Image (cartoon, rainbow, N blue to C red; front, side, top):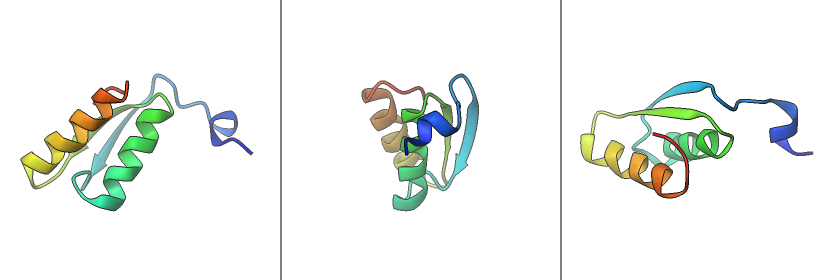
Length: 62
């Protein structure tokens, strides 16, 4: 079963807190892969920027 077929998230926006960490960063990347614009939030600006750059590099919007 493909999750993309269950829920259409294209064009939605999600704020992911703690997105500089491993778990929430992976969630942010997964949401971006499903067509969601992601607001990447973390207490560490450097880690948030790294996650956002990875999302943008892979064709997502962060």
